[in-house]
Amino acid sequence: MELSQQWIAFRTILRKEIKRFTRIWVQTLLPPAITMALYFVIFGKLIGSRIGEMDGFSYIQFVAPGLIMMSVLTNSYSNVVSSFFSAKFQRSVEEILVSPTPNYIILLGYCMGGVARGLAVGVLVTLLSLAFTDLHVHSWTVTIAIVVLTSMLFSLAGFINAVYANSFDDISIIPTFVLTPLTYLGGVFYSIHLLPEFWQGVSQLNPILYMVNAFRYGMLGVSDINVVAAFAGLLICLAILFMVGLHLLRVGKRLRA
Image 1: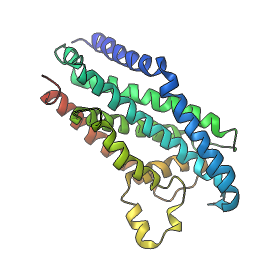
Image 2 (image 1 turned 90 degrees about the horizontal axis):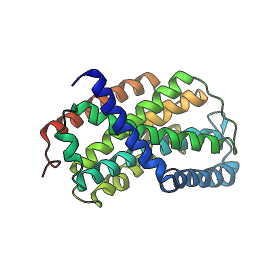
Image 3 (image 1 turned 45 degrees about the vertical axis):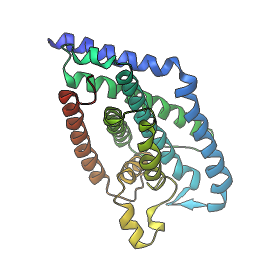
Image 4 (image 1 turned 180 degrees about the vertical axis):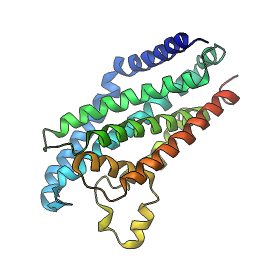
């Protein structure tokens, strides 16, 4: 398959994915924006005013980057897991698999669709946050890089979940019992320096902690962890999940009748 044909295939899958979530924006873009607005009101204005400063910033400024990142990763994940499982459930994915489209184009097409939704929701939440607090970007390079890489990572994770899922109930297990607890315990609402030493060590096993703090560093210039280590770990995880995704497409188990 020529490079120009591969580009057409990738663009087609990506355009389909973008049209999919923009067509039903009331279900895909509006709910997370409303949810995050409630977080800003409750944790930022009501509770935050009583907490005071954290790491030299007002509490609402401190939690804003974490809330933005939380919305990005959850929506990137949910977009791919629901889209690809629906294609698998309807057997339409078999048409793509028997085509000459390379597996990495299929994988990139679906995952970049998840990235597009994650970034779209992230922009909406960022604009909402400006109604509650002032945000000044400390490093555009770190901010953009970490949000795109994180969105891609969770898109890949959603793809793998969709491949292994046997029913629509299965695609909600990981977000409910794994993703949500890790997110809430990932330093979104607090600095791990507030925790006892033992629990600080336990928290450092949570990968979302590194993503949230790297993004907070990009926005505010403060972080509980080493930002270079966060990027290194993120790139390694990306490479692993990408190879797993390619392997699953190549084997075709759970994808073909």
